[in-house]
Image (cartoon, rainbow, N blue to C red; front, side, top):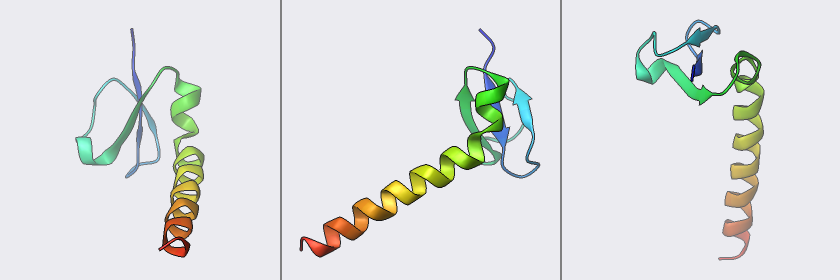
Length: 59
């Protein structure tokens, strides 16, 4: 099964591990999923920030 990765340095989708691990996000099952990695990372960051803020309020 082919894995796809999003390269955060180049902004391109890679088929297989082509770049350094620090530059990759994934793996993803499809090229389309990998292409949406920036939006997914933003959504997750927002959720984590909300969770952190909630924890601070409950201290």
